[in-house]
Image (cartoon, rainbow, N blue to C red; front, side):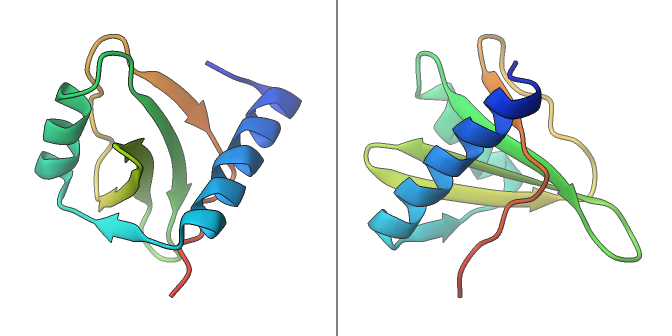
Length: 93
């Protein structure tokens, strides 16, 4: 797991890749886990958000596409998932 400046740098790299790709697919948490199961060593960026209630956001890439999900409770990631904790995840409209 990354911490401090390393997490910020890794999150910035992923954010720039997302801007370049232009497409982010929103999926349900169950479908997000199915995508992770298809990946040998998945990389997931996670952040907590919300104003009145905390929610948990996750984003990963698979076959050149970016997949995003949001959940009310933390999602238990498969063994071998590399998690990067970001301060926030912003999904462009």
